[in-house]
Length: 123
Image 1 (spheres, rainbow, N blue to C red):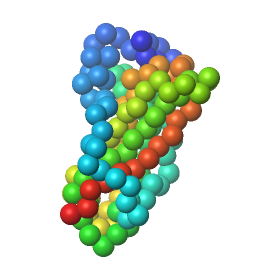
Image 2 (image 1 turned 90 degrees about the vertical axis):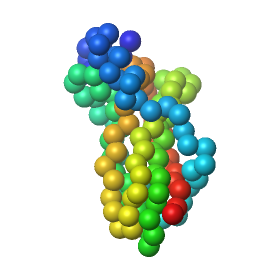
Image 3 (image 1 turned 45 degrees about the vertical axis):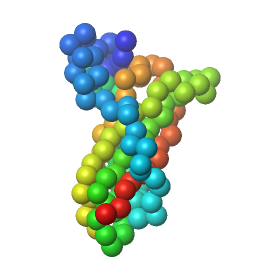
């Protein structure tokens, strides 16, 4: 069960969150020097979204990125990984900034910390 602003998600909210939460990474993507992570933070939203990591990523290169992915791993207070979640975008043009929101299915009460990485595929 998950927390949304301190309250467990309802069954319907969990179904919606599971439908939108991405967990399958694109194995063709790799770290790119032109993909830069901006500010990011852990945010608990009301309703079906619940725990999220929100932030920005920018294409600082001169060319199009056909695919970009942010990967967030979450850990409990013992340091054990309890989930990996993603957000993706396509066609990130040179100089563009993407606002991402990664929906986490782990409970907000279980999450002690997270790490974040960016990968992409150039044109």
